[in-house]
Image (cartoon, rainbow, N blue to C red; front, side, top):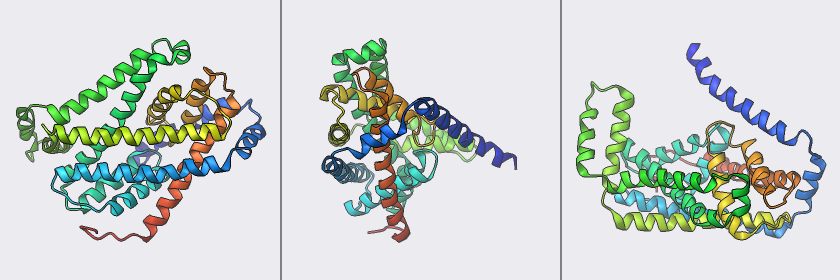
Length: 322
């Protein structure tokens, strides 16, 4: 009973955070005005924005397959695309994005990978995406004077985040071999389970060590993927009549994604609305339009989750799927 209560507390806290922040943002808004902004959106542009998700699925699948191949694991692009969409369903179903990552780890294992290898490939995949996002924000934040007016320390924060993610990438691709060898002593059965699991995952990174060619290709695909994401949001903004400079969106969207990934809310609800209201205000965009933008983004997430649920209901669980 104590364990159930302990596991329930974090979820309850996230619900409270999401509910409190969302109420604080919308309590004095005319929700009819938000609905009107969405209703008057350009449907063709919204359709184009939604279709861009499918390009993103393909890029993600190619990056995932590239990382799997470094571990000697082969996979079909179609299987990886379906797995990624199912992962989105679990992101919606569970109160964090970790649920989707667990699906991808499981499917990487089903392809014949070890458990630690499966976990490491998903971690590296995530890492490449974050590094690409941080890189876009770092390159463009200097020109985002309006945002710097809201948050004077923003350039330093973006630089710090980029260095942090870059340091993790260095560990994966450039850490000395002796470091991985030193981790082997923690594999022994006598080692506490959490440390043993972490050591096995860290050791699984060794297959990526020194692979500059792999890093270059994975990072290139990540830049392409995140470019697709940012352009998607630019199209959504134009569909809603929100006119923010294109270059500014290359700072706003990565920062918004980083904020909504924080494990303090239910799937970014509340944080998503708050971050867009805050950042969009620097460009004279009102809270009504910003919330409409956030809710269209949330609607797209839910639609993808429905697609993932349908695929999950029809898929098989055989090992080494094709």
